[in-house]
Amino acid sequence: MILSKKIFIFSSIALVIVLILWGIYSLSFRKIPEQLATLKSPSPSLSTASKNVAAIEPLTDEAVLSPALSPDGASIRYYSKTNGKAYVINLADRDKRAISEKELIGLSDIIWSPDRSKVISEFSTATGRSKFFLYDYAQNKGTQLKDNLDTVVWQNNEKIFYKYFDAKTQTRTLNFANPDGSSWQKITDLAMKDLLIAPIPRTSLVSFWNKPDAFTETLMQSSPVLGGERKNIVKGKYGADYLWSQDGNSLLVGSVDAKGGSKLQLGVTNSLGGEYRNLGIPTLVSKCTWSKNNKAIYYALPGAIPTEAILPNDYLTDKFRTNDTFWKIDVATGEKSRLVDLENITAAYDAADLFLDPDESLLFFTNKIDGKLYKITL
Image 1 (cartoon, rainbow, N blue to C red):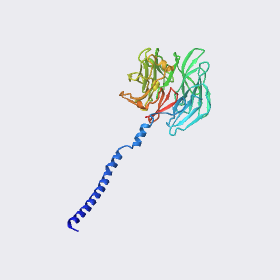
Image 2: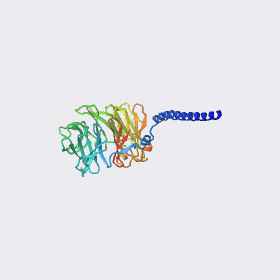
Image 3: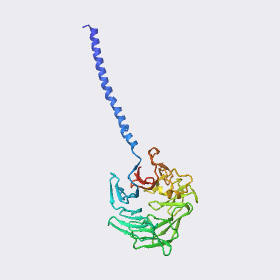
Image 4: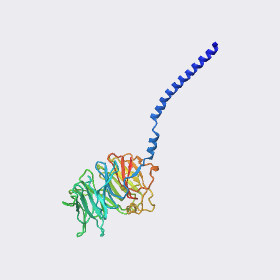
């Protein structure tokens, strides 16, 4: 074999070997940046799944009455508007079971004790006067409260506040008693007929005010439970409603801008009713709840309010429904943040009875349009 031919053959073999080694080198080192890119980039399936998670989800398939979270945040109790039966929903697995099979005809409201072991049930009657019953779940025992009560709230697990009307003397009083109405004591006389009552958290005081009306001044007052001077907390507001922070240091005030006005406004005061600040939010107190640290407010912002509506009167008498969006505001800074993006609100919600779970990961509300209970994952 001539020398030139031998050189050509050996050169060709060497070139093939070099190309093979280069291919192996290239493939081996190219995998490293590809693996790093994979680690840095989210999985396409996870990204798609997160976009498909519903921001607002129904928890019940029926209209509910007075839903209440258990103290440990694991379940919610409520009464059915359809049949008056009581149910509990486990939030972890959505398991629902009846805790009372008895159908309650004429049930109009439920007031849960703070520990959820007792309820006071309000029933409407043909006379227009409500009847109230205490039911103790621990003892499986029911007791009818005396007649001529029209407002009842819990002070704690062992005491209640109520407004009483004496038909003989035509006088009204604010009182407190054991849950069954026994061992009652009068707190103060009342001039107002329609009344709302709220204990002031972490104090021995009770607050009360006349029901909101656009044409009437709403006077918020307080009184010691065991006697003492009655004081005005907030006055000069029309159509007003109130909500205490959980530490009792702040008071949320919802009202209209003037007598007979139609512009809603939300503000906050200190515990004495001073240092009022307008938060610049046109919503109702019934669409709000305080954060656990008392520094923020979660709220539903109503839309679709008729221009001719008298507020809050027409809303409270169910003359229209709102179309709400959901927000949070830092009370100190006034910073607002949207809780649910508009594209994730695919139905109409008229939110009421808002409450949070213990770690503020869930916000619950009742939709007045269909009566069902919903949750928002925060």
